[in-house]
Amino acid sequence: MKTIKNQLFKNLTLLLSLSIAISCGETVELPNRQYELVWEDNFDGTTGDSPNAANWDFETGTGINGWGNQELQNYTNRPENVSLDGKGNLIITAIQESFGGSNYTSGRIITKDKQEFQYGRIEARLKTPFSQGLWPAFWMLGADIETVPDNDETTVVWPQAGEIDIMELRGQEPSTIAGSIHGPGYSGGNAVSSDFILDDARFDTEFHVFAVEWGPDFIDFFVDDQLYQQLTPESLPEGSEWVFNKEFFILLNVAVGGNYVGNPNDNSRFPQTMTVDYVRVYQ
Image (cartoon, rainbow, N blue to C red):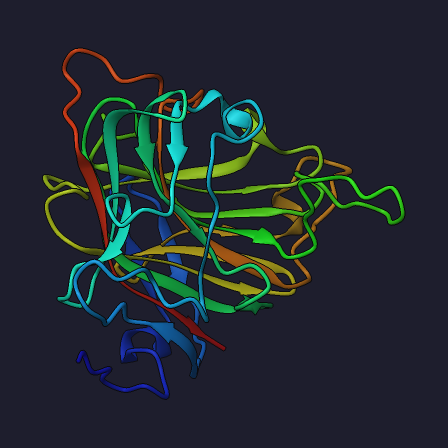
């Protein structure tokens, strides 16, 4: 079993107000905040087990229009695609295989209706896959989102529900991740976004911690406790709505293909895995 050092407060580097320089040369100020751990999943269990059903549900199938992004995978709930490794990790595996009319399978799990949060520090320690056409992501959606319209009720749909992409990566660019927010008037290719680039390192060769710190009027993005992007309502296009003052749920997935990464090619190699050590929420 893994243990957590200093469960009540995030590490001391977050309690100091200082300036840090990141790879792009921009200097931003590290906020002085205190957080207490309120929820975590360390993915402890037996090899081949599904993730804890008290925390996670599977989303399966090909979705409408490739989950809205022209993706190629069929998400399954099979242990071949999503399971624990018996060493305290969650493994999401993208496989090249014929399944349900698709040529690829993978996994997508969500905490909707089980673990939903408004504000705090949301973080995961994980290692990404690497290959052309792979699209790993650790992200959040507004808990009021409904993917199927209900004729009897007002339906909140994307992007009105809001989306916070804590980490997404193009598999062919293993040293660069993006942190983004999507909402009405700033979604898809017009998301408010910034990249973080590792110097002489890659996200697929070792674990890194990806996080946001989120409050009523800010969302700050971190890699390994380096603050690289600070967003507020003033960061949005003029006249746009800030839709992040409500509960959100967490998603982990590895997509194959899609309009963000392009499709696999002859140089792509499968299977590919995203390994997740833990997900934690502090408030």
